[in-house]
Length: 149
Image (cartoon, rainbow, N blue to C red; front, top):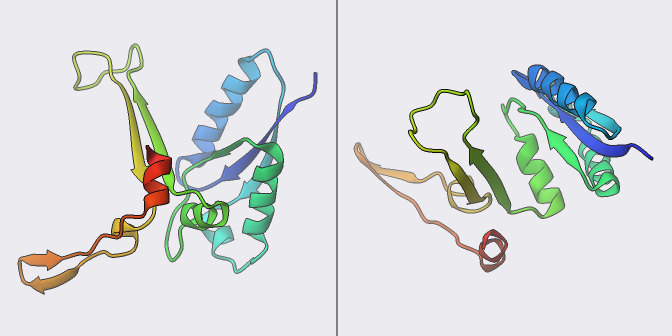
């Protein structure tokens, strides 16, 4: 059986630790994986290499699978760049309880948070109109709302 190819988007911070965990899980599964790594650490994604994200998106299209580890954002967000290039407008954040992990919840949690990742605070952080108040205009687009739904 051929290995399942996964585009792997490396980052900073806890990324290397998460990568070790992902590899440990992958090694325990009864299938083979081939990870195709791309370094999206702060230093690399802000290096000015204009072809980096083209290579990332090409690999994502080829493998149809990707995993992205946390990356530091300073000037530009690698997440936002990839979302724009792929025309992604929704972020899915599943939340579940994990046995043996202490939390503030007394019952199991199974929650899917769906966020529209364009417009809103991404495009208009608001304007202060006095010391204690601000005003903000939110753009709500039909297609991202449909994708979220």
